[in-house]
Image 1 (cartoon, rainbow, N blue to C red):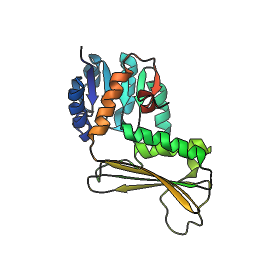
Image 2 (cartoon, one colour):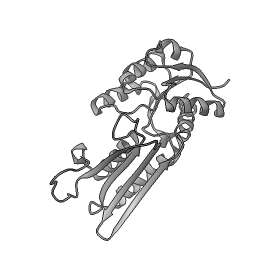
Image 3 (cartoon, helix red, strand yellow):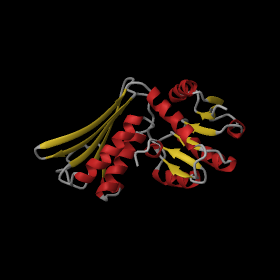
Length: 243
């Protein structure tokens, strides 16, 4: 029997890409949902939920997933830190894949960034640059946010180390800050670069997406993987066996 997916955010760009990716993978979109629909009715008869809608309804989606005991693939980004912490605690009641980016290449970028941040000391200044299309509503992107989390974790820093762009007389750069720069324009699907710059050399790790289908195929792959797993929070590193 094919996998039955309840897709929330079906009319968006990612939603349309997921519909195509599900068909390629032999899965079925059991219900195509928007924020104003009866989410509970749409989710009830599905095997798994994929949510690429709005962070404004994430609490409702996670609550329904837990209440109806449905595995969840969360692709929505833009949650404030405190809200995300609460959502993760609730989502852990069911098998949940939570990722800011479902691309296989990006998740390899996560692994490489972790390795680089571990090997390169504080004399290598870390900066993250991301660019997306003009219609993206949140910044930084979920992918950039995860890259920053990885760097902060490896360097044992907290969020106070982040510098969201720079303006005016900022003074010399310190070794304990991590820069993040968000660019918006045109129809860019998603570009991410992590820079480690020292005196005399610079390492750059870059991923560029040209087709939204890579994220959709990854999300469907995550949906296939998460069904039957033990309740808890997983990411694409788990799905791809990179951990």
